[in-house]
Every structure is written in structure tokens, then in C-alpha cells.
Length: 326
Ligand code: TXA
Ligand code: MG
Image (cartoon, rainbow, N blue to C red; front, side, top):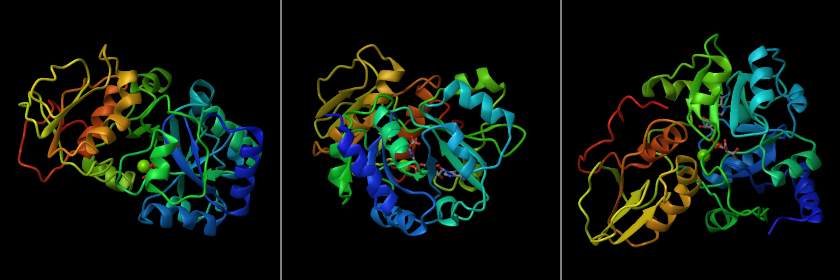
């Protein structure tokens, strides 16, 4: 399953030549391109059908490689890098002029991350270049957590298969542009861990997020089947249930249990694959039930609320959903 040295070397060479390479990270699969090569980066937007106002995360093997990307000497960057990198954390910092505007959508900041997955690490070390990589899905669709999800939706020649992603939801994004660190996306690193390292983290209102982080559209991560959030949905044969923990299956067309013990980390790692299975089951609608707003639950709630079909007939939103801006 894990790519051998020759496959890593070939993929690294393809990246250096300006080609696209899909690769596993511990969060989701990424679609990578040479971050300092504008023509290579343009291929990402083309392949994903992604609007150019949505900036990309730049991946490096090691924090020392960030010197080419940012000149910041922010002590918070060092604190966080020591504690959480490699890992599912992305930091937004001021960019160097060498970083193409296409990568940052014209912003003076850049998002950076050091992924932990051994295949991502091997690829980045071998390529020895910064790699811009969004999630390897068509724009707005469910993020891929397996190589076959990537092959199913993107026409990309190089796909490194590293098996299923452990974390299963995208990295947590934290902006360090202001004195108060600001959460731009709840993700694989729990908010509590960041608070433990830095103290108070600002959580912006949903409306402010669009300007702070342009890729955070309200509808995203979406299955084709309408998905609704509901506390106590009524079973129906044409409907599917996406449940955090064990749930009665009677009356449903299909049921996906994210974790037999309602464990939030396990649920996050299963979330996108379960959404895909329900989406492929020929259902009329999918109901997702309540997930607690702590630990990885914050990221799961964020993905579910963005996947939800806001045009569907009203149903019970999860409690606190309108205030959950992460
Ligand atoms: O786990 C992850 O972060 C995965 C893997 C592949 O690393 N990548 C990922 O990338 O989720 P993507 O492109 O799907 O999401 C990146 C998000 C977007 O919502 C974008 O708006 C935000 O990062 N972003 C990127 N650069 C930014 C910047 N300079 N300021 C604010 N937000 C930024
Ligand atoms: Mg994405």
C-alpha cells in the first residue's frame, strides 16, 4: 500500500517539474503543486474547478523550510511549531514577496503547515520545495480520505496511495496576523490544545469569516444528496442517518455510525467516507444528528453544518448551531 522510494522520487520529480501530485496527509489527501511556480499552481485551480479568490495552504517538511515563505519572527509560531508540528495545524502568517499572489489569492498573508503523514513527509523532503496543496476534491465536494476518493473525482496522473487518513478532517487553521490568535477553521487539532499553548483564542462570527478566510463558504464539503441537521429525525426508507454513536437502524434506508463508542476522534476519521457511502446509497435525504462542541466535535459540527442543504425545508438545527462559527 505505502509507496516505495522509487514512487516517492518520481512524484517529487513531477512536483519539481511543475506537475500535480495527489498525496496523503494525516488529515485528508492533498493536491500538490510547486508553490513558487505560478503555472504549476494554476493547474490546481483548473483541476479542482476552484475559484481563484480561495487561497492555498503551503506545505513544508520542516519548520526551517518556512524561511522561503515568511520572514516572521512571531514567538507564537515557534511555540506552536514545537508543540504541534508535524501535525494537523495550519498557521496564517505574513508572506514573503516571493510567494506568488495566486497561492495567497492576493493576500499579504500565507497559510503554512508541516504535515505528519510519513508519505507527505517523504515527498516534501525528497522534493525540497514548498508545496501548495488544497484538499484533493472538486471544489465544494467532500474531501478525500482515501486514494480512491481522489481518483474518483480528479483527473490527476500522480496519486500516492498511503491508505486511509488517520485524522479524517482538515487541519485547524489559526491566524497569527493579529495580537489575538484567531481560529479560521476548526479541524484536526482541538481548540483546547491551542488554548493550552496560547491562552485565549478568538472565534470570529460566521459573517466575518468570509473576509478573514475566503474559502470558508457556507456550503462546502457537500454530498449530492440533501443533508439536514436534526436532533430527532423520523426514520424513513428513503432517508439515511449519519449518527455519532450507536443508533437503531429500523425504518432507515441506510445508517452510518461514526463511532461505536461515540469517540469524537474516531468519528472524525470516519466522517467523510461515511458521508460518501450515504451519498452513493440512492437516498432522497440524509439526516445528521447532534455532535458535542468540544475536542474534534467542533470540526465535525463545522463540516456537517457546511454540508447541510440550507435551502431544504426547515428542520431542527443542532443546539448552538447559529453561534458555532468555527
Ligand atoms: O488538512 C488540510 O489543511 C488539507 C491538507 C491537504 O493539508 N488542506 C486543505 O486545504 O484543507 P483547502 O484548500 O481545502 O483549505 C484551505 C483553507 C481555505 O479555506 C482557505 O480559505 C484558507 O485555508 N486559507 C488559505 N490561505 C489563507 C490565508 N492567507 N488567509 C486566510 N485563510 C487562508
Ligand atoms: Mg478543501
